[in-house]
Length: 140
Image (tube, rainbow, N blue to C red):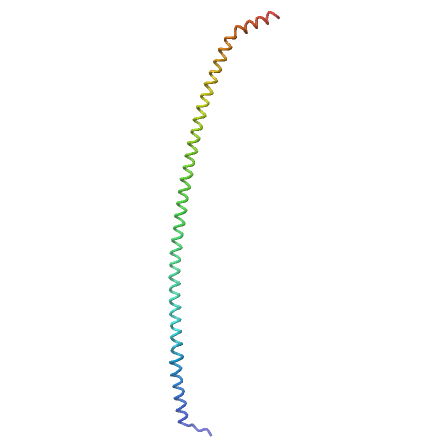
């Protein structure tokens, strides 16, 4: 029936072992080295990503501080401009008030002068008026 042939058994065993040795050196070792290299590359990339995250956070914090400083400078500049504008408006207002006050004084002087002239004019016309009044009374 079935005979076990030791030479065939030995040849099969030698072929099997040699096949395992060849596959190990040509297929499995390069495959394992590729997989381990890929794992190392993934770890390095993850570390770089972690480093990039901290770097991004640092840059974000720096950008926030720059924006905050710019806002503070803008607020200070705005306050300065507003103060300067108020000061300029106040000075113009004071100048206009002074001008109006001097014009008012001049108007009061001219009014007083006109009043005085009118008074002297009327005083010089009093005898004419009194005669006109006497004439009117005499007609009545």
